[in-house]
Amino acid sequence: MAEIIMPKMGDAMTEGKVVRWYKKQGDSVKKGEPVLEIETDKVNLDLEAEEDGVISEIVVEEGATAEVGAALAIIGGEGAAEKPKKSQAKKSEEAPAKEESEEEAESEEESEFEDEEESEAEEEEEEEEEEEEEEEKPSKAAKGKEPARKKPEVAKAPSDGETPKRDVSEPPPSAATKSAPPAKTGGDTRHIRSSPLARRMASHLGVDLGNLKGSGPSGRVIASDVKRAAEGGGAPASRPAKEEKAKPVLPPLQDLQDATIPLSAMRKTIARRLGESLGPIPHFFLTIEADVSELQRLREQISEISGVKVSVNDFVIRATALALRHHPNVNSSFTETAIEQHGEIHVGVAVATPEGLITPVIRNADGKSVAEIAGEVRELAGRARNRKLRPDEYQGSTITISNLGMFGIEEFTAVINPPNVAILAIGAAMEKAVVIDRKIRIRERMKVTMSCDHRVVDGAAGAEYLRTLKVYLEQPLRLVL
Image 1 (cartoon, rainbow, N blue to C red):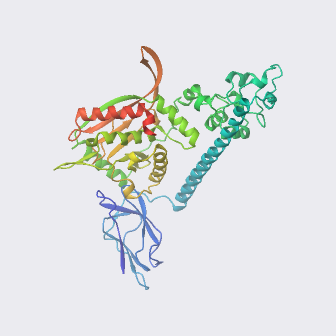
Image 2: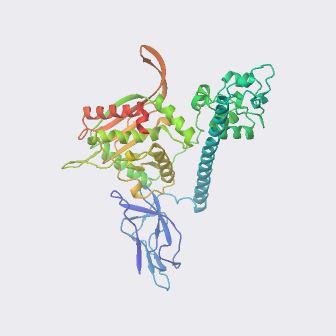
Image 3: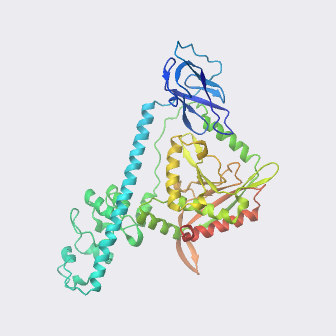
């Protein structure tokens, strides 16, 4: 006979909730077979049978909570099942979880979307290499003095007798638009700077590449430009497109009604931990503004060339980790008897979920490339939203990052995530007029606010860390070399 008990999935966990039973009383089970799903303060997970047998008793019904270590079910040998006991269970006021079929459909849809994106990125990378080889051929032929290059004349420009001397690799944008535009299907669009995927998408969607302004390096038209043009009736994907995208959109109106929403296990933990943080921990805040114009250009080039979707936050994570190497006092924890400095750098990244905030951890972030960080953040964030993280994937951070820039928030302060002694609040990268060499220039600027635990990090120490972080953000080549 064996018991299935409520496990302890973290130091702060005191109870868990039974979401659903996969087996019912009297069902046979095999060792390692999932028997039920539980909800903890951070994740949902399946509990497995520890030996073969029959579920002779279900102690805690669906929707009820039980303390850590309490028996949830009893697995016995073959025989009649007893009636369930409910003495150790506490009835939860929360509604039952969603049906399993909905959850499976959601996860399948998400995995299909991720697979499609990955295959598209790989395909674009392969075609990029092919295009580079093709573009090298005309330049080599030009060196060999072959005057009879007539292929570019397909562009229907009979008025210009000097067409063969035209630089095929990079013609002026005006020439690409004012001369005969390429046909929407089957026309020669090679003279327009564009990625292979962008040309293929334009052909399928009926978008004229000649009417687009590329947002890629050197004005190159990329797939996102074509997609935006198809969705917005051919709007150019340049600076005006960004302005259009920034237009405020109101969320749908909601029906207001009185309601009592029971606290989930995650929301209870958030409430408790924030009370433990902002009260006992003496916070103070430091803000610095960094010029991220070069970082944005480098990010676009990496995304275009490698096909890996890299965000500003991925650069911030690596910069945060590398800056900690210069300031180990910030990579610390406070205890009642000592300050513990950590020998490894683990960056927690705040991820919003429907039930609250969770912080997946990028371990040894200082030793990973920006592309590696991008892939890991995307994978962890996806599983965090589905409540499928393991405890070791959201515990053990040495510093935390919270980014609200994607919501247009320019500046904010964040509450320290114990036992960290600092958290960085990242604002939006915004175009601003700044004075450089006594001239007004338009640059992209981003504010970073650091919340510090004054018991460990003094004002000067926090300021020095932010100054180092700013160097990494404003000289982004340091993050990829």
